[in-house]
Picture 1 (cartoon, one colour):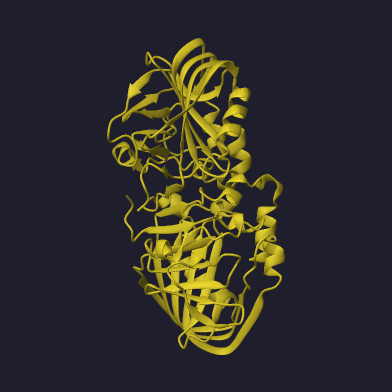
Picture 2: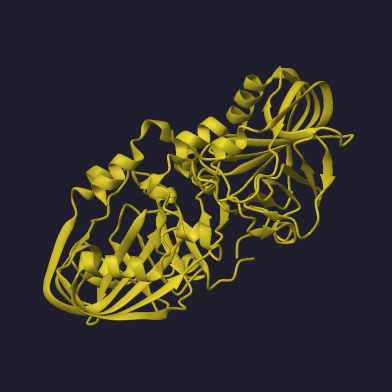
Length: 237
Length: 237
């Protein structure tokens, strides 16, 4: 079995969200068995999840931060066991500059990795989606109801996963980043921020453990050939 | 960790073969640690590999079947621990009919699975590529030197992996099938056959354990954005 410090676990695929296969197919307890750090969403796109130091939090569509129970169900999530290495300190740099410095420093475009940034962010903008019930709508329709939140200045943790381009559709190619404020009153899926001052740490993986919801009949019976997976993903993400 | 009877292990990606990243980055001994059954290719596209009951065989470009040593290096390979269930007996059916019967019977298009077919095949056509040295050429140029082999009637084992469409590029979407004759004098990557009579067995996975060659500098430094991965793959495969 793979070394658990170099393995990124993923349940579900980004692609299954596109046509609205939003059943919860993994318990939070099972996600935590594969890591103490992670991100994801709940059944019916019920908020944005972030796991830090073994504790799972949900940012809901009202902007509240809730602790997540062991039985909380998810259609799509990632986790791994934290073993980060300090990468650099950054001081009032923009998001594009941050991404450029990271990608040139780590030279890991062809594998999976995680970034953890603790610091202070300006004009941090996040989103969270309200939970839908069955029958589920497409990702595009469900995400159209998302709430947006913004903070002029906020101190907290950004957790990001990078996936190589060839895994686009299965994973989110490029960076997929969630945020939690230190005072637990703000967070979500990151849409953007102006500047960050803080510490960037890095953890590279050599293995993706991709788990699929093979006992879910909606997933197994779905005809993906009719979906514009990549088009819809890049509109919604 | 995942149940090892429901996990498909993959080292490398199909995409890395396209620009000619053909360094051997995994030993056969390490592939066998993840399964007793599998397929793959050697460094420099050195032949076609098939692992049956824990024994790895190489079909080289002269059509010879060789036993593979523990130190044999590979750029791309799959393995898993066999736990097949009998699916059906087939009698003189064509390859398209076989695939149609299998896909309707297993209803597993959205996950990874393996097929093992033992029987007699007519006009079985295979290929094997001769080993290239450095500097490696692209997959298209390297595969242009492949040898073709054909047998009017041959009894043996077809081993196939099915991967869902969303993993195309990382894996071989659809079926990827290798063959070994019972008398070990014929085999390779299957290009086609006319009819088969035999027994089809099936093993479904819920996990892909995708391992990447992160210690290989040629892989990690390559700019994949310049490659027409899917176009070249579907020409060569």
